[in-house]
Length: 370
Image 1 (spheres, one colour):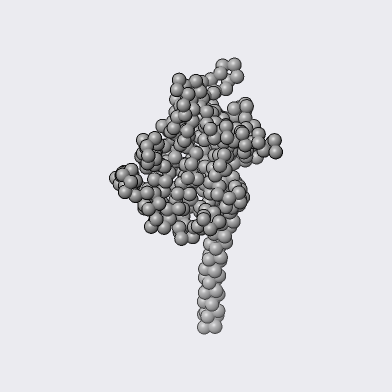
Image 2 (image 1 turned 120 degrees about the horizontal axis):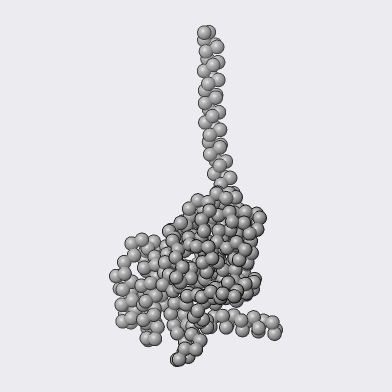
């Protein structure tokens, strides 16, 4: 082979290798770009930021609002703080359970995997003995205000005053008034699946918590609020979206039962009380055709979106949090239900009067009158 021809062939091979390398790099970049676009698409399951530097968080007092929350509080920590809140409620040093968790959040940097009750005990001891106030205790905690606002956004409506109709005392009760999304006596299984991959429609993260059970299991309103959406969604099937009265929380219940997904009395705008039956477990969804069972496993998709500003309600700025530990905490309060043979509906056995419901309905009446 002549040297000129040999050099020409070698040059072609080198150019080919360079071309392949360039194409590989370009393809990798393009795939990442496309994935980012897909992840940022405006859908019911957008990908929210799961990790970020706290130094990027705005100061709420400066008029800005929180852009993300990575909720990692364990059910054990929630229950311990709640018990301190409950025990101190009628004392001269009431302890707000969410603020206690915020102190721990600031101490742990939001990571509760190494939570120790002794840390909480030490904080409570200093507060109960009036060695410190919350203000003094947290004055040097750079991110306490962030965690306090974020955790109140997650947990703010779950503990408070309520009344049992017909109770002998007629007085207000105080305690956990939030409920598990699964009715009492109905079995379910679950695991921590937040952030796992989903592929229907496009690749995305699972921004909710799946609770597997039986067809027709009554689904319960976790917190009192009003129905903001009700109907079909190609991803969630028959679904209900309930907004808390303070507008901070949007509860999303999806894949409800075919043909009979909701409590018959519900419509958009309806007011619900925590513990009410709102729908029934199924496996609808993953279809543009309404009332289609296209989900393999019967389950409830339970999601919780935080909203610090209305611009975060829909689109690329949505904040969804992991609900696994939250549902474990709420499992201690499951609404007992009974079936009406004539209507085939399930209803709660023990009604409660939630002042938040009465206040909201009064505000609606006042607004109509003006």
